[in-house]
Length: 602
Image 1 (cartoon, rainbow, N blue to C red):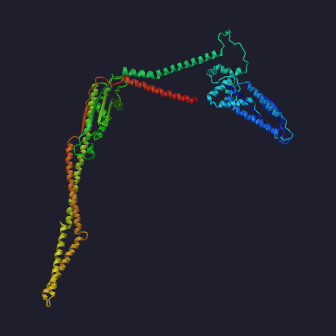
Image 2: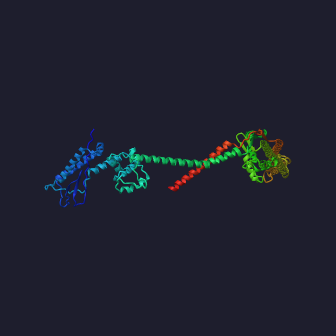
Image 3: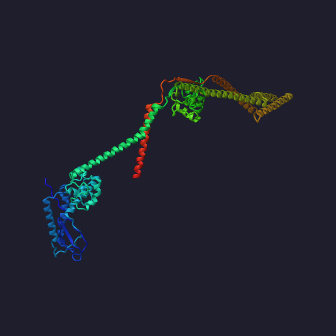
C-alpha cells in the first residue's frame, strides 16, 4: 500500500510596512514581491485577489493532507514523489507571486508576514502527532538524554523524539536505554570532550605504554561497566547485610542469650501453690425485697469478697505473715539467686514489693470465687503461706460479719427505746386532755344534754296544751290557770339553761367538741405507738437470734497442696519474650533513626 506524499505548508513572513514581502517555498525564498505603501496601491486587482485565493486553497489542501495518518507516516520518509510535489508547489507559488499586477484594477494593500518552510511545518505536524501518543514524563526525559548523547539541538522533549526517529533511532528501545548507563568518569569528562576534536591519541601511562589487548568495542565496554555496577551493588548489599546482622547480634541476640543463660542456669526454681475459696452468705429466711432476691448468690457477697482480696494484698497482711511464719527470712537466704533474693536489711516497702510479685490473688465476680497462687523457693513453705493467708481471710470475713451483727443489734435496741418513749408520750398526752376537760367522755356529755333538752321541750308543749284547755272554759279555774302558767315558765327557764350549757360545750376554746377531737387523736396516736412498740420488740428478738448465728462463711473450694516440680521460671517462654522485647526496641530505635536521618538529609 503506497502512502500519499506529504505536502508542505507555506507561511507568509510578515514584516513592517515598507519592507519587502518574501515568499518562501520548500527550497527557500523563491520570489520577492514589492511591499508598497497603502498610499501607492490603494486598490487591488482581480488578479491579485485570484492569487490570494489560490494560496489559501493550497494551504487548506496541505493542512488536510498532513492531518491524515498517511501524511504523518510519510513525513519521516524521503520519497521522490514527495520531492517532485514540493518542487511543483514551490514553482507554482513563485509563478503566482512573480506575476505583476495589472494597471486596470486597483491592487489591495499587501499583507505583512512570512511563509514557513515545509520542514518547519512537517516538524510541527510530527510533534503534534507525538503529543497524541501519550508519552510519559520518564520516556520524554530519556529521549532528551538520548538526543543530548547524539549531539542533537532540540527545542523540547517532543522535538528530541522527532529528530531521533528521523535518524532511525528508537529512544525507547531497551538496547538504547542501556547505552545511557555510563561511568562517572565519562560524565565528568563529557563537557571537556565536547570542545575537542576526537582523534586517536596515545594514553600517557608511565611504564605501561604497550598496545591495548582489550577490544575497543563500545558494546562490550558498556556490558562490562554494567557488570561492574551490578557487582558493586551486590557488594554493598552484602556489606549492609553483614552490618545489619552484626547489629542484630549485638543489640538483640546477645541480650537474649544472656537472658536465656540466666533463666536456664542461674535462676532459682520457684514452687507455686494454688488454692480457691469463696464466701457464702446465710442471711436466713427473713430477708425481703430486692435483698431477698440476691441472697444466696455471688452478688450478695461481692463486697465482702473484694474486701477480703484487698486485705490479703495489703501491707498489713504481709507484716502479719512475716510475724507468723517468717516471710522475709525465707527470701533472704543465700542460696536464692541475687535477682529474686531479698536483702537482709531491706525495708518494708521492698519486702512488700516482693510480696506482691510472689503472691497473686484474683477474684471472679461471675462465679464469686477467689483464686490465690503463692510462690516460694520451697514447696512446703509455699503451702504454709497459702494456709496462713486462708486463715487470715476467714478471720477477716468473721470480723466483717461480726461488725454487721453488732450494728444490727444496736439498731434494734435503739428502735425499741424510741418506740417505748413515743408510746409513753402519747399516753401522757391523753391523760392531760382528760384532766383539762374534767370529762372522761365528752361525746356522752353532749348526748346527755341533747336528751334533756328534748325532754324539757316535750313537757313545755304539754303544759301549753293544758293551759289552752283551761282558757277555753267560760269560767276557768283561776288557780289551775296560774299553776299551768307557772309550770310553763319554770320549764322554759330550764330549757334556756340547758341550751346555754349546750352552746357553751359546743363553742369556744374549751368546748366539748374540741376536747373530743383532741382526745380521739391522742387515743389514735397511742394505738399507733403500741403497734410500733410491738414491731420493735419483734425486730429485736429476730436480730438477737441472727446475731447469735454466723451470717458469712468462708468455704475452701481447692485446698492448698505442695507441688513437686518447680513452676518458675519458665525458661523457654521467658527467653522468647526477651527476644521479642529486644527486637521490638531495636526496630523502634532503627525506624526513629532512619526517619531523623531522612529529615536531616532532605
